[in-house]
Structures are given as C-alpha cells and as structure tokens.
Image 1: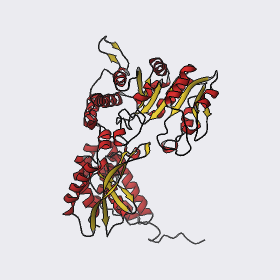
Image 2: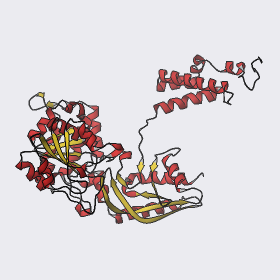
Image 3: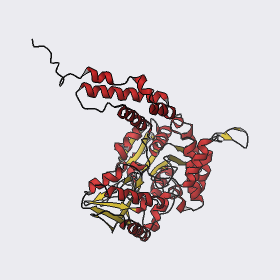
Image 4: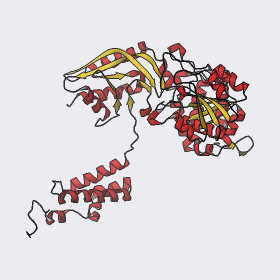
Length: 474
C-alpha cells in the first residue's frame, strides 16, 4: 500500500491554520468590541465563529483566502450587517401595475401610516367601551363606517378575503350544500383555487350550469332541503367572452328570497367608489347590497386601497352568526389593521379620493403622466452617460391584484436604452443597486420601460439617481 500523500498541495499547512486567531482573540479586537456594543455580543460571537469556521474550511480545501486580521474583522462585520439587514425593503414601483401583488398591493396614505404609528405605540380602546367602562367589541370601530359607506347593517374584518370566504361558509354552511356556477370556480394567486378554499369550510359545493353559461333555472333546480346558501363569485382575475351567460344579481337575490336562502357574494376587489368615469367596470359593494345580496366578502388591499384584510358585511343576523364562530378568533385582525381600515374608510366618507394612493393613481390622466415624464426626461438629459438614451412612448397601465384583467389605463412610458447594456441587464442593475432604493421596471419588446403612474412624486429624485447610476460605470 502506498503511503498517504502529505505534499503541500494536498494537505493544508498546519502553520497557516495555527496563525488564525482564536475566537476570544478575535473578539478582543477594538473594531469587534465596538460592534458588540452596537449589535449585541451574542450576535457578534455567532458571526465571528462562523467566519472563522468558513476560513478554516477554505484553507483545508486548499482555497486561497485572506487571513489578515483586517480581512477577518471585515468578514465578521459584513456577516453581522447581513443578519441585521431587513429582508422586507422599500422599492420604487415603476411597472405601472397599481395593485402589484408581489410589491405589496395597495400603498397606504400618509394619514393611515401616521394612524398606525400612533396606534402601535400606545394603548388603545381596541376592545374596551369607553362609554360604559366595560369590555367591548373590536368590530365596532369599522362596522359603523362600513354601514355609512356601503349601506351594510353590520361588518367584521378578518386577515384576507380568502379567510372571509372560508369563515362565512364554515359558519353558515358547514355540512350543507352551497350552490355555485361552474363558471365561477376560479383559481386565484399562487395556485389557490376557490373550490379548495370552500371545501375546507366543510360545505358541499353544488355546481350548476356549464363553464360558459349558467341560468337562474339551474340554481333553482339544484335547491333542496340541504341547501344553505346561494353563492356568487366575481371572476376578478379573468374574463370570459363569447357565448356566455349568467343571471343578474337581482335575479339571484329574488330566487334566494323565494326559497328563504341567503345570497352570499364574493366581489373580490372591494370597489367602494364608482370608477366608470375613468373606464373601469367593477361591481360596487353598495350596488350588491342594494340588489338584495345578504352577505358580501371583499378585500381591503385592492381597489379599496387599504391594508390587507378581508371584509364581511351585510345582514346583521348573518354577520353575527359568522362572528360567533370559533374560527373568527383565529382569523381576526389586530389593532393596526383596524386603525388602517378605519382611516381609509374615513377618506371615503369625506370623498377625499386623492388621499388614497390607489384611488389617486387610478384617476391620474395620461396628460398628467406625460407632463411628469417630460419633466423627468429634461432633468435626466444632462446626466446621461454616452450611449444612453431616453424617450417617451404611449402605453398602458394595469390595475393588477387580480382586478379588472381586461381593462387598461392609457399612460406615457419612459423608454430607456443603452448601447452598452441590454434591457435585461439594465433592469437587473435597477433592481439590485449598490446603494439606494431598488427600482422595479418592466421590459416589453426588448425595451426597458418606466411608468410614472405608480411612482410617487417624491420618488422621482431617487428614481433619477438610480437610473443614472444603472447607466454609468458599465
């Protein structure tokens, strides 16, 4: 048998490993002592140990590594910085998608943010009735406002709209049948399917009609002694055209009254203000209630423009039954969400659309966006490096968030090009800057495009800096 190979190229020099500082020696270095005071000794100890282990592993595998004290201290400091850096970061949304699910959907108004700050930092009367000095209900803070805005008798708030649908079906139809059109059994974001969410409630779905055509008579033929609800789901994330039919909501509610069955409608996007004047057709919550719908469910962070939430509103007796179900406690929201919903609804009561960022972005005209794009273009021209060019082209913004998939808003787009960078590389440099705020853009037909509809006015300066930085130092 041949003796083991102990040549330097296959075995690390023990002397090199012995030169590495011990953990205690490393922690006594002034820079790390100061870091421990600022970031906490336990974290610095953990990351110093990790840095030393990584260095030993590299040396043991014959990799080259900087073993100087300064390099090791810098590695520890970088590890600590990464551990403390928040993963959730602010970004500039220049995609033109107003309710961008991946970017957090509806941004909140400054007044709402301030209300959250005040609520978070102090005690509140969340479940305390100040008038009688006894325990109260957290629902009272939003129920009265929703009654004024949409005309409901009562309302509760849970953590999202899928939870609202699950809770309502569990409370009102568990072990019984819920009649729904086959054309409304949709899939929402991230692979979640409405039938699967509903099945978790313990209710039995009774599908009627066909994918493209369902009539009132289909619902009526399916009604039996086990029927608990008639369910209508707004297909907010797709459109079916051509040979299609479904009963008007008034026909469905009349059928419900005839058979003493509640009609439950999931309108999805939570549209509380009429947007038909800007070419957007979405069902209004108040219109559904006026048409006789007994119970509604909708999102808080879509067209409503508030925080992530699911709102259940309608007849008091039905809302009370839902609220009394044990699942409500698992799905209810905290004081911060209630504060944000309350502040957002207050803007609706005052008709202050411009205070709600989502509503303001929806209502921006193409001419207003063109003016802003022109001003930004002039601001940037003097700072563009050689080979970079900017232009303005016509285009469209979209609402997003599973809302109004076939409806677009005319806009003007900044088109960015470089002879040194592809559109994909430029997009990456904007998304992953060395410093500053990441900018999320879009690429169409090989061009990088920026839509100022979704860029706040006070973000135009950081956007300009990010764009110049991405185009230079290639």
